[in-house]
Length: 466
Image (tube, rainbow, N blue to C red):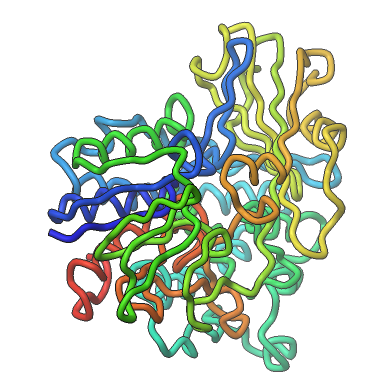
């Protein structure tokens, strides 16, 4: 039995801790804040409740596997996940709306045909077909296996080239170029670019392989957790407690200690030293003095910054409302969940905007209310109060540098959008969470638990999650 110290109590950290504990190790989690979950928090006021982080779960199989591997009760007995249907409604720049059914490729194609004319659905399906090829080529190396030392293969964009495409012959295209060339304008390209932008990925600089993100949603669905996604964090935390994981809250870590060339423990901010056989850093490595080599240094890309507006509304949620609406760079979430509101005569609405390097200026509360009013009838008249959360609030809650939020890893772009490997140049020191391979987002961060636990338990023989 090894003593393992985990830095941070976010989703990736807790997924790692639970898996290591069930393998028989003594695991202690050290968290600078007062609670678990990292970015997956909850804000409550006047009977309204809002998720402060992700509002939906994509690829829920990651957490189903976690619960299968760490205890007797499956995820469905610990948290209620519901696939949202319709999956998403788009409000296009010209005011038209387009609604995609949940988990249906054929239904999505039919909706596109209705909005953009016969044959448009086939074009959309063709793009998603090429996205499927990119997903098949990268699913295991990019999501389920430790990052190999030779990353050249993942540096190449796996999105298949169109025949006769001078653009594709000249250089690998960006996602925005793929959307414009293969879908065209008139708002059709927005179906692809806005879905990817919601992950904190800039379509103007992202490789075409970013199409795997909408492919993943359309294939595996988008899921809501009854009571809010915070309930998923609570379920993972309680599973950790069941497996005898110890949590130390209010315990900021200053430094990873190294003795004899390998990780040997932690030094806390109050000067306390903790000994450990293995250390897992599951926070942004820039927050802690961590002896990283160049290969395991933080990603060079500029992560996104999130602006979130909570809106408390009087009046019942209208009958034809959908859970998620996309309006370019803005996402509006309207969960039909009694746990989010004082009663049926009120509604809680969350509005997200993602700002990436070189994109539009930071939105104001008025900007987000104006955008949300295009998706929520009578929003201005119904508004009781609103509150804006900025990257400064993200920094306060999670400690992330400048309130940044990591995006999922993507193949292509010369490897620029890959995250550091889970192993480091220091034996006994591992990286987990959204700042490590395979990157940010609930599913990707959760996968770090399987990868890091596999590397510690199986060592060099570990070949990936099964």
